[in-house]
Image (tube, rainbow, N blue to C red; front, side, top):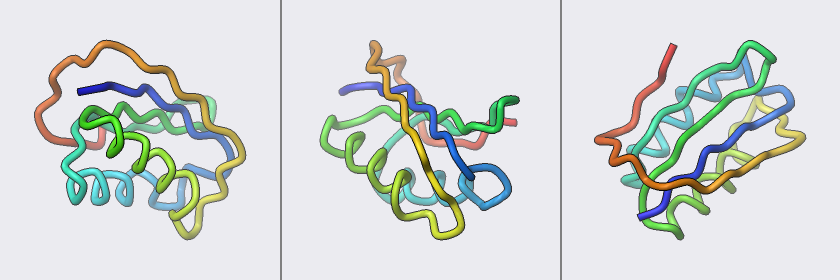
Length: 89
């Protein structure tokens, strides 16, 4: 079980980034949350199997149709034990 705290930069707000991320995370069995940040980026915390966490980071970086991700920061941390995945406001 790993946890990744990820910041996505670029055109990531106002393009259904959070809802697409939530849908994909639930589909993949990845736990955590996603939220908009005041600087225009999106923060996501993903917990789960290491390969699934890496897969969803890659998916969010390339497959959200209206988004244009220009930069991704990933920090691995100790897992907190999230139950499910949610959009935080």
